[in-house]
Image 1 (cartoon, one colour):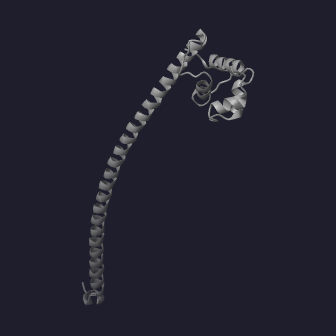
Image 2: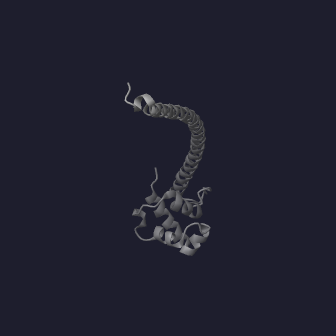
Length: 167
């Protein structure tokens, strides 16, 4: 498959053939790319630099090579480049659509899982509330028994038979 290096060389060739300035190219891309980025792409030796195809090279290809139309006047290299770039752009669009579909599926799946977790958490909170009520009831019983034992011990200690030393 064609690499970015060949595309950049072809873009430089087209720029030279058409005698385009950086401003002309910026206008052709609809000012999608900054002039600095365009200068970097068309700088000497830039074909050996790594550029992101989708963000940098693709807008230049669309603007300068007019990928959508292959003309009879194009030489074989240009026709081949346009065909390959057109296929590459189509593949990127297919992948973007696939990614969007997967993203939607994943969001739906995550939403379903979130609802399930929320239902489970609600159930657990209800169970905790029931356990808390039971614990409070047990604590009340314990407090009542503790109070009863304290009262019985006090009665025993205050008993007239215990205070006189009679057993």
